[in-house]
Amino acid sequence: MVRATRRTRVPMALAGVASGLVGTLAMNYAQRAWTLAADDVPPPSAGGKHDARDWQERDERRNANESVANIAAQLLIGRPLTRPALHVAAPIVHFTFGATMAGLFACSAGHRRSHVPTGLRFGAGLWLVADVIAMPVLGLSAPTTRRPAEKHLQALAAHLVYGGVTALALRAIR
Image (cartoon, rainbow, N blue to C red; front, top):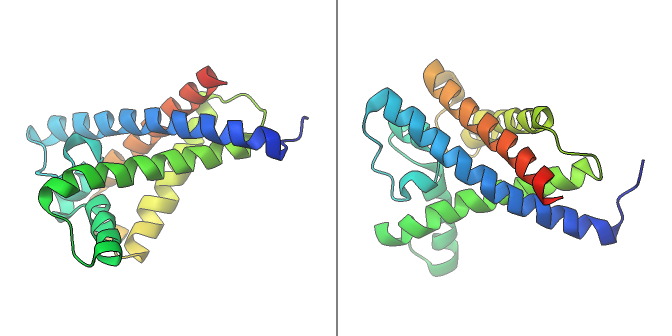
């Protein structure tokens, strides 16, 4: 097996970031398709279809990406963002997280080929760690025990799309 070096990790990480942007976009569209099939009407998110928290807005009437953007704004400028600013900031939070996680995924995969099953496992693992565990612990969502099964399935399906598309994009880029 070829060992990754500092010289090869940077291109791997950049390929991962690019593939993560593609995967995040696909995730957003999958999330919105589920929401429209379930409710016919999308939630009134500041970020629109590009912040992929439809399940949370449908269930909790809040959005973790908007919360993180407002926390950052409070720390940086001393006040929460306006709704037009959230329209830009919430998707930036989501795409940045997706790109960063995919960059780490690409570095961990090293020189191995990226396959869809690996991407699906990555997406499922990210759903478990981020949505099921970290978001409630950080106060960015309600406890998962209060979440209806359909919302868990919507979030899991969206993360599987993210992981699968990220793996395909990574494979195409490499």
